[in-house]
Length: 381
Image 1 (cartoon, rainbow, N blue to C red):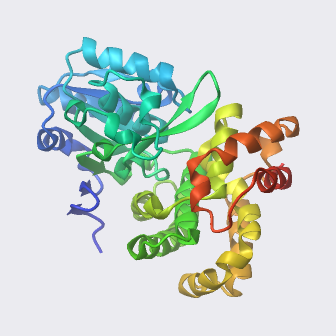
Image 2: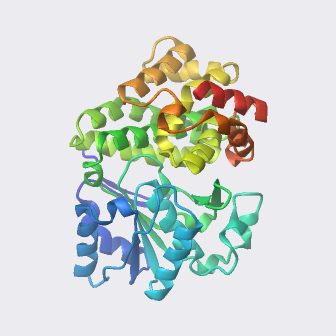
């Protein structure tokens, strides 16, 4: 089977190995003639970024680059990116990289024509309607990891550097107009990043599948996304040059992001404050929290995961699935505790208060309290 295609769901997607060369066509499709490529500092000097800039320059699209993006991007990164966008006379953004580059790039395009502060557009009620939709610059997304699925998302996560809170900024037009998915771009990912990002995709699927909200399309996508991670993440982790595994993981990442329109839950509610306070890797944090949250939600999700386990070829129903999750974490070299990634127990009360405010709580199958979250943090420490 040839793992390539042009898809139109949930947006226009050009998928397949070697398709980075189509970047100029993707820009034209999105209506961009003077792109600003936004990525993170770690990617700025890597060959894949140079290759993208060379392709743009050869097509007469310039070499506009902004790379002042932190691993957990904040409003200061955003202000600098918007300033670079305006100063360079750019008319669109190429969001390039993992979750941080994609999220910040999307927000640069979003905020480039707005006059209100970014926090006015947090994913609360209908706050997104405050934005001037016509002033949002077009976006082409080029993922270089297989995890967040931000390339097909309508929101970004931005950290408030004053309060150390992660905020979800949402608008329907933040969904990139064109996505260019080239699995060759992920072949050089270190094993730890392959694991953390892959388990981020898995967490999205698990929480979407667990959510009590009604969305059968997302439910089906989440189930198949879990299968792809189960089958292909161990292969991608063992051999980074396995392009079949890399391609399936890129699909799983997009599927997780699409599925969690149905909702997230306690895993993400906990992971967001941990990332904001301790600057921890988001996917790794999700993976650490996942076994404890599955146990907490057990009675509410047991029946549906009995069915999922059968589809996934896991014996033992829900309990077998829960054991599989811990085994997968261990195989991927994921720490068993938050303490191992720098979190400290004296901050638990603060973390629990931050977590209960996270919008992800609304998708948890068991209603959460501050005390529940405090207990979960203790268990994960």
